[in-house]
Length: 182
Image (cartoon, rainbow, N blue to C red; front, side, top):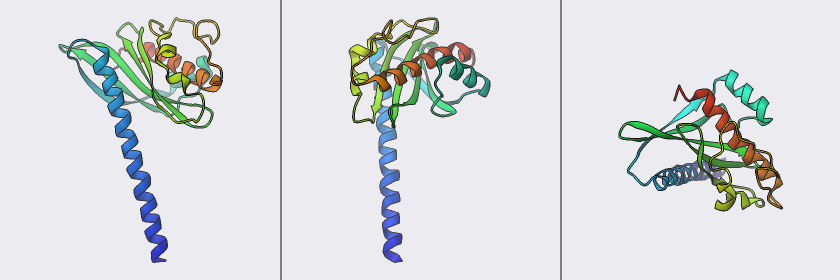
């Protein structure tokens, strides 16, 4: 019984320690992207944003993809106390694991950049490629996100391409709905 308790304690310790390490790694990578995206010294704050149920349902219906959770992280990037951009950290499901991604938008809702923060699948990781992500720059809630037309597919990464593209589109639509509240 003592051995079983010890093993259980070790498993909990390892699980929660690694979860904290992953969370810290995600936070640091996201903040690095923010600071490297702007030439000037900017300030940023972040908060957990709970999705209003009516807005969540509306966007999920349009995009045909559910949000990973009822909340996501929103970064407000400011220069001299004036908001100049907003960042959204969220997840989508790949084949079976979450893909953590970050979308940086200007105040008009145009995409400044998209980045894959944490890719957990053994295949399809090409969605992390900077060149593939650059195709979203300048898109907004009115843009076409059709794969094979305005968004390039990636051989061997069909599920990831579809999931990430829909996730990015959800963020552009969400921003239009909540921009006055953040």
